[in-house]
Image (cartoon, rainbow, N blue to C red; front, side, top):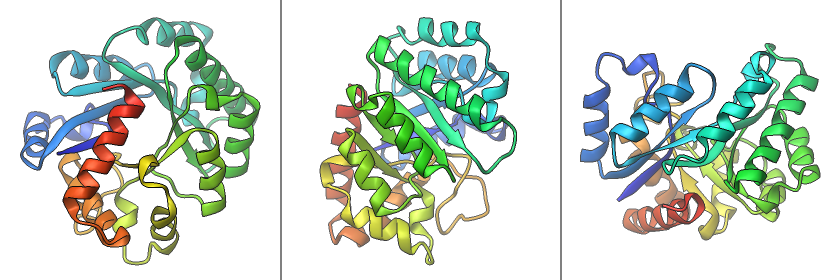
Length: 254
């Protein structure tokens, strides 16, 4: 069995076939899907999915790209919702220096506040990090994020960055890019991550693996990430399924 540790099934890209996409994931052996809500629109839809399906869990937080729009009452809202039994983590939170939508100082403040929130409610955190490796690691360290731990979602950094995150009680998760033929660094990093800290995901509908690159991603395709991990680690696919499923259940308390 597989767990897709990061998906966005509530995306409008699934409006025409959401039920079918969920069913395809189940048929592909995906036991659990963890859906991520990251703003005023997607947090409610994420909660709806978690309440509708026994096998879908929720992660809620405020995406760094949307930091400029976050208000204090939004933070209080997330904290209240985090008490829901299907909410397993706070996220995706972090920094994004690729899209120039929220100033860096605003992103930093919102990131810190959500780490502090996670510590108050005792939930792990799901980290979004795009082109901001040094600042992400620094803020995690300064805010003592190791107290709650979490996961570096769809990890794209170096082994040096991964080591620093591992030292702070974080898991490292890989998605579709690790299946790309030219993805040398992600494959090298995956090969070095301790087995008890390895996770897999889709980030659907984004970052589709081969052979669906350039098309809409969906949770069923986490199987292709598992296949790639098996090749990289020289293990049987069933071993990868067990390793990553056990790790996800430990991290998210499933």
